[in-house]
Image (cartoon, rainbow, N blue to C red; front, top):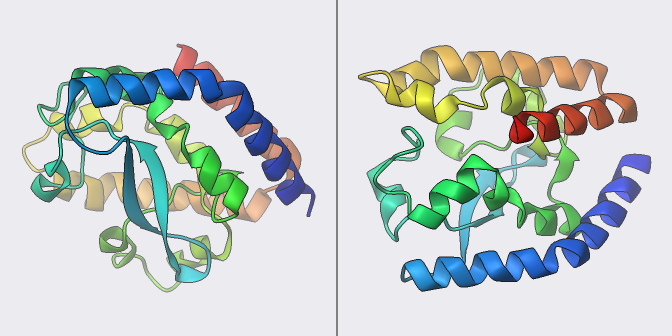
Length: 196
């Protein structure tokens, strides 16, 4: 109850406070490339239910058909504006809409696409017992995930065999010890990570 109240208040005022910046970002996206401002992607949320996550579009139209994983900061599918948005996590701001609506929280396991949820074990599905979040332990630990994937000949294999299991372990760690203090600590560490 307290967490939901926190989410509603801070997502609402966050959207109001950030509105001028969101408008500027939207204009830059439209000026640089054709297509919508937002990229809506189907992700898996609480209780294993699909929902659409909001992000500022950072790639050229149709790029997701060439693969779901982003390979390095200089992935040719990423626009110039998109590169800056991704670098400073500004493309995540529209997820405040998801938080306000209630299918996401500020802190919680980052929502995966169904393709990767299908690799979860029965025990791993406990992760879907809580709302997904904008940030979590894994977001901090794998801040440079795109670069890690770029450095290998088989990004899909690296993600499934190494990165995903570590993310799952971190998500379980969060679920087994979650409280408001831990959420605030994760938010603080996320801000520090982005600034660095």
